[in-house]
Image (cartoon, rainbow, N blue to C red; front, side):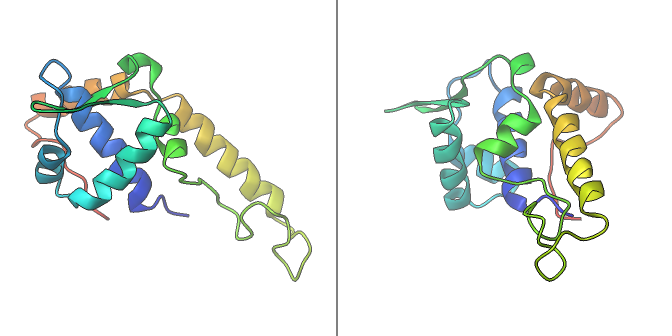
Length: 149
């Protein structure tokens, strides 16, 4: 099971936005450059994030995006869910037709794993990631970066 770049990039971009929240609204082009994410891909993600009420857009000169919620009220699962990313460890997308139309022997195990992963990510907020990033900076880590493993 893997989280696709869609979910990874959405979380990364939201953290980038949160780390610069004290500044003027943040342009997607700036996030794209800092994080090495395609601008057109970010535009698609932010359209979904805006529709979900996670970001606010500011139009005009000096415009860009801001978080719509406080850091401690915005979970990683909120972000992943808003870009229609599914966390699913089953082979059948949770339908239960994994083995020639019937439920496989381990279906319930994979469903429970998916639920636990979602619960785990619901318990991690942007505030937690900001703290983790600051701790990483203290240890000499470089600016937030995302790469596909």
